Amino acid sequence: MSIEETISVQEAIANRRSIRQFLDKPVAKEDVIDILEQAKRAPSGGNLQPWKVYVLAGEFRDRLVNTVAEKSAINPVGDGAEYDIYPPQLTDPYRTRRRDVGSDLYQLIGIPREDKMAKFAQLAKNFEFFGAPVGLIFTIDRQMGLGQWADLGMFMQNVMLMAKSKGLDTCAQEAWAVWHKTISEIAEIPEEEMVFAGMCLGYADPDAVINELVSKRANLDEFAELKGF
Image (cartoon, rainbow, N blue to C red; front, side):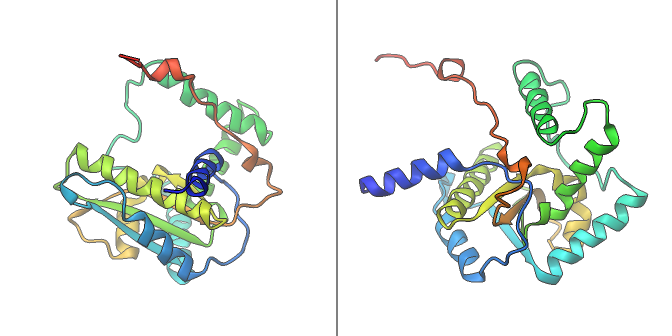
C-alpha cells in the first residue's frame, strides 16, 4: 500500500461520522455498486462472508419510509427488535458514554432535556433515513454466531469508509431493527435472515447544525494495554 493510500484511509477514518441530515441529491447506482464491491473484502472467519445487504432507493425506499410512518401512528414502538440493541443492565463507563452523546446531540440542536416530544420527533427521523436517498438494510443468516456478527460489523465499516472515499456520508442505524417485520415484507427478506441494522447513504447537508456533532472518544489508556514494548 502506498503512502497516498494510507493517508486516504486515515482521512476516511478520521472524518467518518454519523450524518443525520442529508441533501436531496441522488446517489449514482455505479457508486453504490463500487462501494459494495470494495467493501466485500472485509475480513471473514472461514471466508463465510455472512453478510447480506438490501439497497433501497426510489420507490422501494419511499415505500418503507411511508409504511413505517403509517404504522408508527398506531404502534410507535414498532415490531420489536429481535435482539438487545443495548445490554439491558448497561454499566459504566458505557452507560455514561451513551447518555453523554445523546445529551450533546440534543444540546447542539436546541432540544431541552425535558422536551420528550421533540426528542421523539428527532428519533423518528431515523425512519426517514434522515432524508438520504439511499437506505441500506444489513442482515445475517440466523444460524450464525457471535464471530460472524463481528464479520458483518467489519463489512459495514468498509461500506462507510468506501462511501467517504467517494464524497458520500453515512449513518449506521440499529434503530431499524425495531421494524424488522415491516422491512422484511417490503424488501422481501427470507425468514432465515435476521435484520441487524440499516444505514443511510447520501450527501451530507453542509449547513445542518446536527451534522457538526463529533462524538467523544476515550483516551488510549482507557481501552488499550501495550505489553512487551
